[in-house]
Image 1 (cartoon, rainbow, N blue to C red):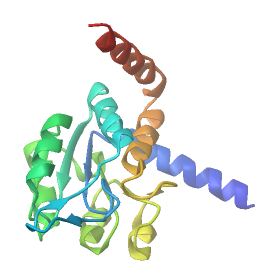
Image 2 (cartoon, rainbow, N blue to C red; image 1 turned 180 degrees about the horizontal axis):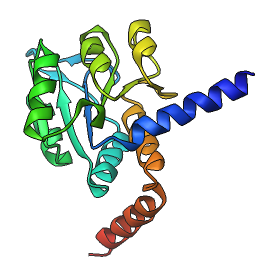
Image 3 (cartoon, rainbow, N blue to C red; image 1 turned 30 degrees about the vertical axis):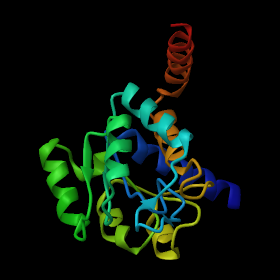
Length: 191
């Protein structure tokens, strides 16, 4: 009985994931592990996982749009988002709902076409609005409760990549993209 229920849930998750055109995410606790390193001058440093960066790269190869909506502001995040080629970067946002609606309108997307990856209470409202809400493994219980996809990986440890990979597999794009990414990586090392 449990296997049957689990399989049914996977089918529902895949159905929702097939509709995704844009992947939005929080940063602290999602794209990072949530820890902040503070230097004596007050500067904060965060660590990002390369697997998440590759996941975003693969999303772009597949034609998916990506973006960040976060409550904090960081110059380092601006640089990271620029390197990753994210279409949307919104920092210092307390009302994520309003920004989500603006993004959807700007890209002419239905909310069912948007995935949001989050970890804590600041993400709760937008996660109830999008078509494919995903929670990192160490997310707050309220976030895990509303998530349609629950990662096996914690924030900052490849959870974003895990969600993107699930979406791409559900859309039938994973195999060709994985092979294409290997070719790109191989050719970039030759020059």
